Image 1 (cartoon, rainbow, N blue to C red):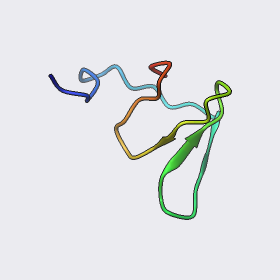
Image 2: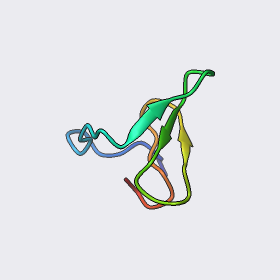
Image 3: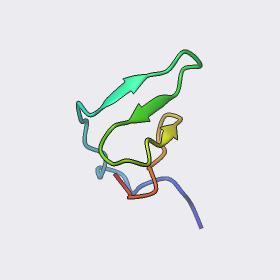
Image 4: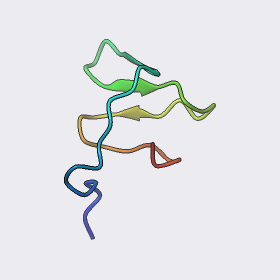
Length: 45
């Protein structure tokens, strides 16, 4: 099973900020997922 989303299903959003280690922190929900490029958070955003 691949954790990568299907091609064409990624949509840019403005509810994130870049962390010092190069990951993105999602600001959509209170979980504040810290993600590498191509990953989805726990709420699948």
